Image (spheres, rainbow, N blue to C red):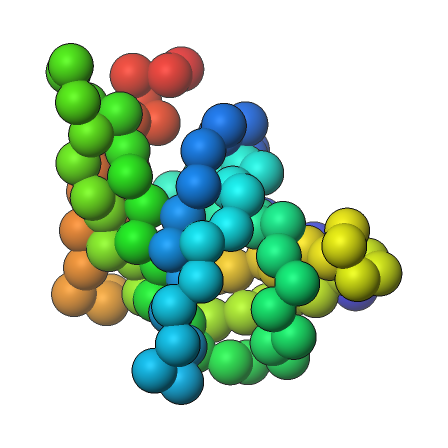
Length: 107
């Protein structure tokens, strides 16, 4: 599979809410970048599936909920260790600027 990442990933210790087909589930976030993220999940979503991710991002003494619109681009691993790679939709109206601010602060 061709590597499409143009930004390095930053390890992220936390959960995100993955929504698709009217469903919502809470999964572990493995890493994030300005272009996408990786989740550990048992969700059986195929590449190309549109999703929304609600990611609580640390901000000051609390959190801000970041809405990220994207699609599944990778699904790897066996059940229990499955990972999804999600690429953010270019030009989508979402709050990825909150994620970008967080990533700049981590650098």
